[in-house]
Image (cartoon, rainbow, N blue to C red; front, top):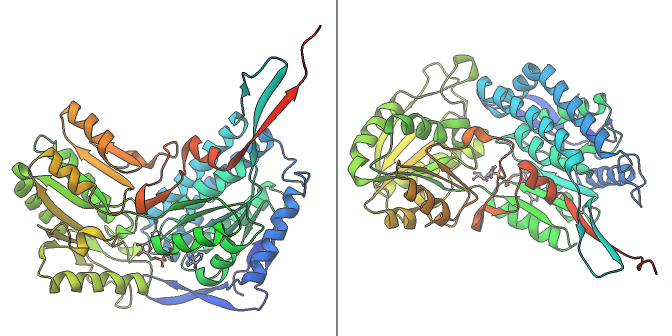
Amino acid sequence: MPAHHFIANRQVPATDGQTIPVIDPSDGLAYEQIARGTAADIDQAVQAAHAAMGDSLDGPWARTCARDRGRLLADWGRAVLEHADELAGIEARDTGKTLHTARNDVLALARYFEFYAGACDKLHGDTLPYETGYTVMTVREPHGVTGHIIPWNYPVQIFGRSVGASLAAGNACVVKPAEDASLSTLYLAELAARVGFPAGALNVVTGYGHEAGAALSAHPGIHHISFTGSTVTGQRVAEAAARHHCPAVLELGGKSPQIVFDDADLDAALPVIVNAIIQNSGQTCSAGSRLLVQEGCYETLLSRLAERFRGLRAGPASMDPDLGPLVNQKQFERVRQILAAAQAEGLTEAARGQVAPGAPAQGYYQAPVLFRDVPRDSALAQEEIFGPILIAQSFRTESEALALANGTSYGLVAGVWTRDGARQLRLARQLRCGQVFINNYGAGGGVELPFGGVKSSGYGREKGFEALLGFTTLKTVAIRHGVTD
Ligand code: NAD
C-alpha cells in the first residue's frame, strides 16, 4: 500500500493512482511508495482548506479562537515528544540523517509547536491615535489558506517553523513535502488529526516539485506561500505566486562565511567550524561553507582542521558515523561533479575524511573535503554545494575579510570569531546577511530567533515571533463616533 495524501483528516490516494518510490539513501534501495500528486490533488487539498476557513471566516478552523489553537498546538507538540523515537527513525531512514541528528530535529519540531502554542494569544493589533471623534484599530488576521513547499534537508524542522507558525496565526495549510522526504510530514498530519485539529486545517499532498509543487504555487486559492529550497526553484515559485498576487517567503540557502581573526579562541572555534560543515552532511542552508582566516593564524588553524577532517567518517546510521549519506543520487552526483571540476581547476585539497569501510557500496556517501587557498572567484567559493565541502581563504585586514564575506550573491548567515568587542559590533552591522553569530555559529538553532536571508538567499523571515507577523495580514478599522455634546 503506498502512503496516501492526507486531506481533510483522511488518507486520500492520488487521483490518477500514480506513485513515487521512497529510496533509502544508505543503500540506494526502494522500501516504500508515496502518492504522486497532481494539480487535481492539490485542488482537492486547497478546497478542503477553504472549507475549514469558510467563505467569510466562518468555517470550523477560522472559528477556533487563539486560545484553542494554542492548546491544539501544545497537544500536538506533546504527541511529537511521545512519538519522538518513531518519528526520528522515519526521518533518518528517509533522508539518510544520523539518528542523533534526526532526533534533534524532532526535538526542535516539538519546541516550534510549544513556542507557537504560547504565542497564539499574544498576537494582536493596536489602537492608533487619530483625529478627535475616531477610534482606529488594527486587527491581525490570517491570510486564509497558506501553501508550504518543504525541502528534504530538514523536513520536520522546516515543517515546524512554517506550518506551526501559520496554524498559530489561524491559517489553514496545504503542504507539499519534498519527493525525497515525505514520510515524516504524513505522520505529523495524522498526529494533528488525532489531537483534534479540525478537518482541512492541515492538508498534505506528496509529489514532484514540477507537478504538485508547481500546481500549489500557481493555485489561485493560495493566499500566501512559504518556500525553502534552491534559488532557481524559489524564483519559479515566486513568479507563479505573483501571477495571483500571492505574497511569498523564500528561504534559498547560502554560502555562509565563518571569519576567524588572529585574536580568536581557536580551541572554541575549531569544533564549531567542523560541525557547521558536516552537520547533516553539509546539506544545510546555513552551513558554514567558507572559512575566512586572518593570515597570522591561517596555517595553525588549517593544520589543526586538516587533522580533524582526516578522522571524519561518513557511513550508515547503524555505524554511528560523523555524517550520513547524501539524500539522493542527484545530490551525490552533483557534489562529485563539483569536486571533479575543482580538481580540474587545480585547487588544493588540504584534507579528506573517509567513507567508513563496510558502508553499503550503493549508498550515497561523500567523505568531507577541506580545500585551501581557494581563489575568490572560483565556483567553489561562490556557489552553494550542499555537501560536506569546506573551502578556506586567508585575509590580512578587517576590510578584506568583510569584502570576502559579502562577496557572493548569497546573504544568509555569518560567523565571526574575535575577542575584539568593537570589531564584533562593526562586523555585525556591515555583514550583509540575515543572522550574525559572534563567537558561536547558529546559537543552537533557537526557534525564537528570526531566520532568513538577503540577496539570493531570499526574503521574509521564519522562526520566532517575526514569522507569526508574516503569516497575518493587517486590517485597519476606523470608527467615527464623534464626541459627546
Ligand atoms: P528544489 O528547490 O528543487 O526542491 C525543494 C522543494 O521544492 C521540493 O519540495 C521540490 O519538490 C519543490 N519544487 C521543485 N520544483 C518545483 C517547482 N517548479 N515548483 C514548486 N515546487 C518545486 O531543490 P533540489 O532540486 O531538491 O536541490 C537542489 C539544490 O537546492 C541543492 O543542491 C541545494 O543547493 C538547494 N537546496 C537548498 C535548501 C535550503 O534549505 N535552502 C534545501 C534543499 C535544497
